[in-house]
Image (tube, rainbow, N blue to C red; front, top):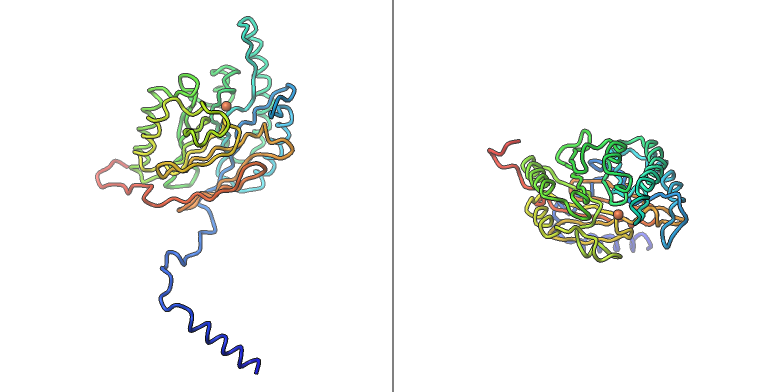
Length: 308
Ligand SMILES: [Fe+2]
């Protein structure tokens, strides 16, 4: 009797399954393996000085050590830090400035050896605090010819990483030269049919600056327009605000990552997995996990006759 009931139940299940199958695209499982993965952290902001408000200056070094150890356990194409490696020192008294630069540099030199333990190649974004050690010295220490540049992850096609320098000419200002470079770099990427992730210290949108109101880029409307017109940017990753934030604007995912310096008794870093149709953020500590979907139309097909 029990067998008969089971057979009857099975028949009902079969009869109630709709005849038309779901479209193939929907039925396909998500790709299990990312095209590439990278590590990310921001606002390490180490300083050999007492904690202040939410800033845990000295202990951030221990969190960085833990972060590097964890990142080294994963196969990563690269790691990127989004600026403010150390807090630095600024005295209103000009006579004390040389000693401020020296002290800032001393703290920077405590952070860099920790980052050198990374197995993956490390890329740097310049933050406002980094410059307290002097721009020229910082560039030398970080091996940068200039603060803005682009690169493609090793052995990865169709993806380009674009790094901006928020402190191009002054606080929160890219400047004319960098803005023109950005426009040209994105145009080239679009012609090569590449998708782009933009990295910058400063968030671009008011919605992605949760704590401080006035810290988005000064030439924000122009930059926003350039990113939109390029048709190839899928995400914009920033730090500086110290809190986590997210907004989608003109089809571009804007993510602000929380500061490692404020991640007291926890941590703040991420592993980002990039797929053909989405970016998955695996957050550690204060960084929320996110899945950022994008459509192929984000990337323009290369037109015949365009230089490749
Ligand atoms: Fe900052």
